Length: 342
Ligand code: SF4
Figure 1 (spheres, rainbow, N blue to C red):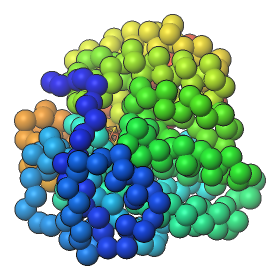
Figure 2 (cartoon, rainbow, N blue to C red; figure 1 turned 180 degrees about the vertical axis):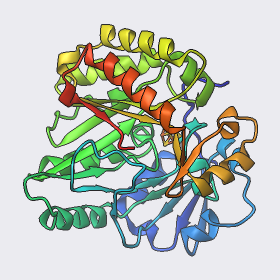
Figure 3 (tube, rainbow, N blue to C red; figure 1 turned 120 degrees about the horizontal axis):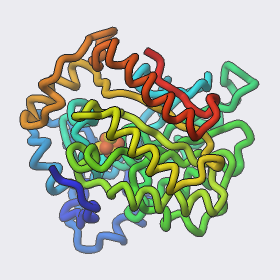
């Protein structure tokens, strides 16, 4: 069990891919960490994809790698991501890996390294998004872009202001909706930015027992709720994510009380919408994550395998769906509750 506000890493070493040094973002970052040793590398993958890395040890002292992203800059949505009913759904990865350490997170099994890779060529991302907006299939809907899929981007905002840059970009695009999903309490990092209807700030909220047991290094629920209140007060569109709903002992009671607490702390009528999901993970990532962190009980439960993805059993999924949507229905209109497709 380990739930505490994450420290900001001091980055004893910063690895710089050849070609990345010329970008202004690289120079900004290097100035922020004047004591870090700079290590030049030919390609970020030589450091990041090395075999035999100890993910758990690296997580305790993450290093930063600055790199230049090569195409593709955006990816089609996967079944694991929730599109909340939007059709033109894509994601981008300005940062790989996360300061937090949720034990149900697929990143533990996805990457060979726990180090962080920040891509400094933001303009290439922006150009590609402009292109995708013009070519989106459903012209009646915006391009919906998740930029915090392989990371928690807002948690990183005091190190690299990626969210600020993306929000400024979105402000000038007519047909985009950027989702920034987070567990961070760092709303202050955005407090001087005008709210923007093309951006959805999405907070993942979980009951205390789930935060304590599985969401290691993340801010406690009370701090996340405070950040949500600040965002709403400033006029941002805010989504609440109850994802994953974890099947802890007496989960029905736990989540019922938790949702009552959430909506006594937040004005339900100001919430843009909610998304609900259950634990799910690509089978290969699951097996790798279990090897890396064999003490976590998540990796010893029974799951069903469908299309390469492991998730809780069908009857349990149905029960979660009923219990959580009934409860959310006490506070929100039906159209504001997006339950995962299963
Ligand atoms: S905050 Fe999100 S990306 Fe980060 S470890 Fe937790 S689940 Fe993974």
